[in-house]
Length: 135
Image (cartoon, rainbow, N blue to C red):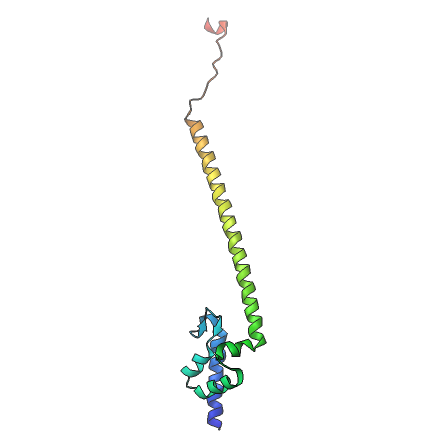
């Protein structure tokens, strides 16, 4: 009994670490935004626990298990909000980049115009010489 308890404790510690890693975990299912609990348990040789969880939560285990947890729903809601904020930030960054490019184009055009003006011959005012200067 003690051995089984120790095995379960080790299993749950590993599960906690993998769930904490979430997207970095090889058990993360990006298309469903779920942690693959079923595969994790089977990889660790805990098929009996997987079957007990399926009896309790139903099949498919991943969707039915995570759907019942309030923290998962909070996490999902926060992740969606973060994605929206990142999309808005990316949009603003793109607008800023476009305005910087436009400012560079305008500056380049101004510099080209100034360079053309420098190339044009400048007009010099020549004052007619005064009669006393000629003598």
